[in-house]
Length: 420
Image (cartoon, rainbow, N blue to C red; front, side):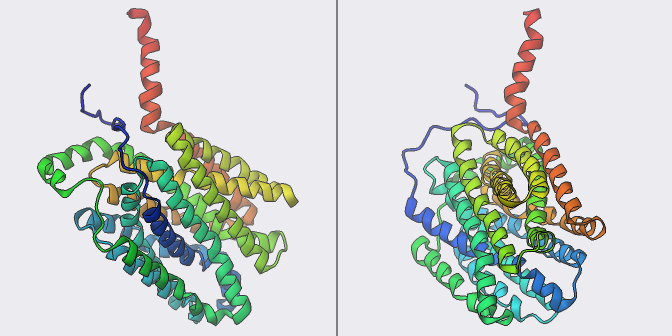
């Protein structure tokens, strides 16, 4: 069988390695991901208080989210490029420390501008952590790439679920200016990465392998995989826009439209993130057993239906729809990261950075028009717009390479069979 890979096709699956999944190292990396993403999520449930303190509109909130995310858009791919060249765990250690410092001072920021400085620094630092950690997760997976990445993503989503509870709990007990009490968690996680993972982290392929192939290998990989990677990045950008918009405005929707308290709004956000974590874990498992492309397509279509159902129902049924929406919205994230690594085997960290950073930055630009739509027509209209975007993205997923390879060849066989 030829080893050549045609343009627009996934590389052939390799034989399962004898190495088993390194549960301890995966656990340490996942703990770091949990803590880093916990800090990322501390801001959103505090928006009702910050809106009152700074006299902000929903458009201001959407603009803040879009601008801060867009400013960080190139960070993870660039860090990924550096990691591919210089694999050092300092990226993870310093990233966790910076995330702890930046996001723990948001309650002390007296103005909109200073709040933005704290958030940009904290999220910049958190972005530094991801590309190298994602590459290391693959190296510890023992061939179970989807499962390992989904566990890593699960931990991050647990952190996102815990973050609102942590910030709301600290602020409720000690006041808005006490958020600095959240700093120690990041220092503990950074120390765990340093002592248990170490500074030098081995890559899945050795540097000598890349040197033997030279620049021609990289040029060939770029020519082969830019098209599929670009399509995957576009789809995941829209998915990030849906997730970011839904998470940003969910607490405000619950407080304003459902007349709940700030604490209940924070619990709703945590429930969304928690079940998103479970959805990512399920998505990774299903991708190893069946098909990652099908997981991406079906999960997005399910999320479109459940977002609409969440808005139009109330009580227990509405809560159930929120749970399913969270699970389906995040089911595709770890799957897409693994698929990107397979499409760019010589640039795994950079591909991971695109999926875990750049798509989120571009997707966040959609949060501003979603907020403007809510200011003009109400938050129900914003939610419906997110559902429409999810449906269109799900349909677009059927253009992924796996569908074209599998069903395109079958269609060609059907149309060519009469002449054979």
